[in-house]
Length: 112
Length: 114
Image (tube, rainbow over all chains, first blue to last red; front, side, top):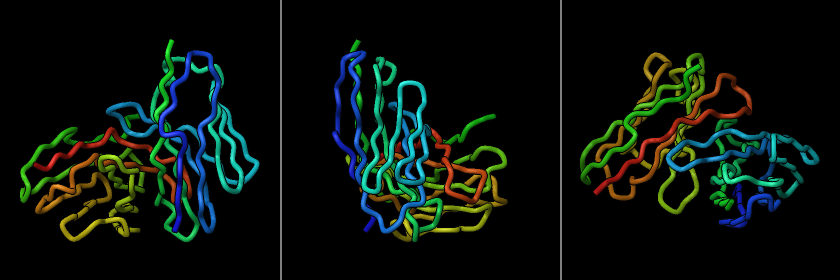
């Protein structure tokens, strides 16, 4: 069965304190791995898609990387506005292309 | 370009009642998805429409849930009769293309069944 596990469940950082969020997965095949950001009371907001091991993508203070077993979301010099829940989701091969499997998310709090 | 919209934002109903949730996807997006997040759990897929056709409804929990997408535009998700375990946040998402691509999510409808 396809599984997605995110760690830690919650992370508290000081402004400027860089860190990484982890998304570990077990799937028979991977079409794509997605990172989303979700603010309270809102829907998930797309950040990145990664398709193959070794791929990296960057956007402002965020950088996503992918291996065959896990993905990391690196946050460099975070600011309070980066506080949100970060969700990892997979599109496993062998399922319909639109069916995403989500992890439980990491709640990130950045203190000024 | 307007984003995905959902109505209502909140709904509180009694067990046994009926509730209908509505989703308006981004204009021109043929693919529409429904997801649900119950308290303490991850977001889970419910079903996928391509235009007015159900592409995948493998995530629908049981036959109390009925999704429709008349004319390939907006979609409704009806729960009848509602049970306590149906409480949660229901998200709708849409994409234009039929490939593995980012899904644009709506703000969700929070359903509380008392």
